[in-house]
Image 1 (cartoon, rainbow, N blue to C red):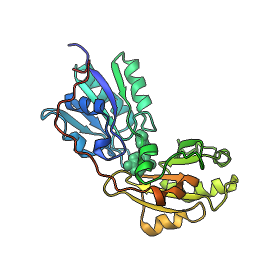
Image 2: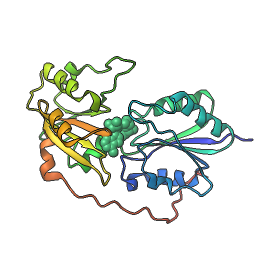
Image 3: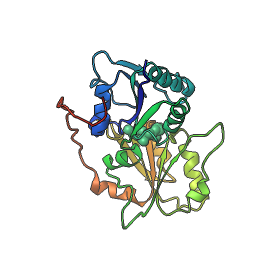
Image 4: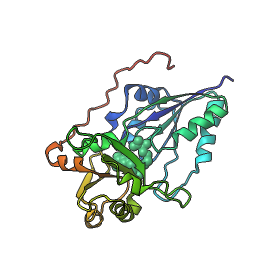
Length: 262
Ligand code: SAH
């Protein structure tokens, strides 16, 4: 049997219509879809009726299917000649362990492709009315994880506090107060604006704003929790003017044709 192929597809931040044309085409052609928890279920409805759909979703602080088993599933179905879509929230190479999955496929000599997606770190913020850069307020942005790696903090918060750009923190909610404290200790003003955006780009999107000193109280009061984006910087002040009501576009059944994708 000839070997199949794996597409690592970014599903975007939540609004199903933010998937790319190529990503949607891959979903519609897949024999097997292996997806994460943050993927919009409406996208799965685009799959063929006999497509095998496997949920390997991880709840926060809980890993029902370990990464090596996800890698093994990708390999197993591709080896069996299937067209496999690995559907991941946002962009597959932004903190989704997509790099590790691709490495495994490369090690096994399997063919794969990456279909980039709109990362929540950029597109999710836009849906909350926050531009990640702005000529007058921020000339760089830094996307970091707040998650500890084997008990160790991978970030140098004091160094990040010195960079005058927008700081976007993913997977940081359980450590919000500690992170804000470290940024203040590193020299950032306690008055620096901070926003926390939950379920960005989804109908249930919610946001709170405050400062490095107060945001943890706002989050607690409004019961904001993961998945959420923490954004630190002057661009947060633009939110009042730039917030908009999103109108998701319907994904039609019109045929999309991409060359070379069977
Ligand atoms: N590859 C993804 C990120 C995976 S890490 C991307 O590019 O967006 C998972 C973290 O991303 C979550 O803990 C949360 O911090 C953030 N995240 C993803 N989707 C989100 C959404 N719709 N709203 C808020 N945060 C989101």
